[in-house]
Image (cartoon, rainbow, N blue to C red):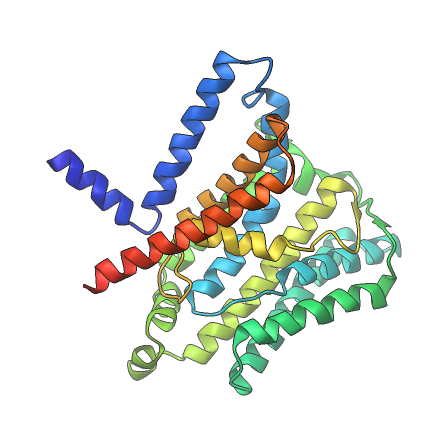
Length: 325
């Protein structure tokens, strides 16, 4: 009975269900890879290297989106911001600017865009869904206005390349960045007063205001974090590929939201965890990788993600009702 109760408590924890699902999927993938090593190369060094390069881009994007969702808002423009800031960085480096200064400029642009979206949302009393949907289209057009529909090469030099795209202890640098940022965000949300304000703002904004929390300031900071992380994800992606294409960020904002929802974040705000976001991004790319290894048609991924989103949303809603009861 005690074991059953402990498992039940694990499932109702903010990241409990995704942790169980992730571990179960990993166990099945590893077992099948050991049985059929030639057909299913899941645990091969080449496949693991590809995963560690791909996961951080979505993961870093999801960290920013997740903080904003916990605060009770959405940002559908992060995919366009991700592309715009990456292109600005690549163009500036091509013009002779130091790559570190160009990267800092890209992150600053992402933060400013996030603050702009947050200010419009709060001052105009508009849903963030509408404001950032407009931002998605506006910044996508700004990409074409800034550099046209052409690919931009990115050659930052060995130091910058090694810092963001090299390897350390056999693990890709981008994955180390994802781990470090996840730890930093964990400390910010779960071990800092600002995190308490974020959860309070998303959970019950009138009550948070009543106890003296500046909910408007909290939300604008959360928007800024989402924009800055979108820019950082664009940096990682650009270093990984060595170029930027105007359409490379299309749809990634939906994957980031999906990673958060699958990771246990509530669509109404006030509930979630950094561990859940981390595992949600890992799970999406694991499923993508498994489908590719099994040579399944590409549209299968969309079907699986759709089922996961609906199922995770239903489960999260069930947990919320149970908690309220």
